[in-house]
Length: 172
Image (cartoon, rainbow, N blue to C red; front, side):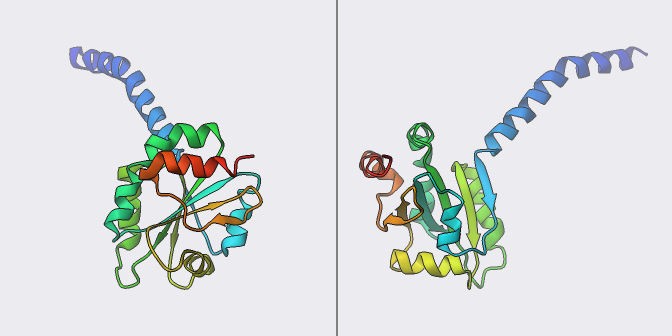
């Protein structure tokens, strides 16, 4: 009987903090949004019409790409305040079976806020982005509010003051 009472007390005391932790985790995870994509670049950008879009093209095998993910939190206030969409597009390694899992693990670790797409070989969006970028990773682009790429070689997140200056040109 005493053990049941003791367990009940522990549950009553700890339950609110456990629920609060789960609620907080849900809020944090809402900053990372996964998208499926079979669309081409034009169709993908239509989803965000009316907003400036900062596109971060990266690969799970690319060390400098992953390093740049660490700088995105520093830009959080600017992006949020100016309603700029962050679109992270990851390119797969065709012969690595666990690449999609590695991609999710990297996102979970770094928590870059924004929309995330994992592209497989043959995707129309992959083809469009590679042509636009000159076939290089990491690559950063800016699309204007009309869904047109206006800067195919934008500044990277670690150059945050220069990137902010670049983005401000397309906000009005």
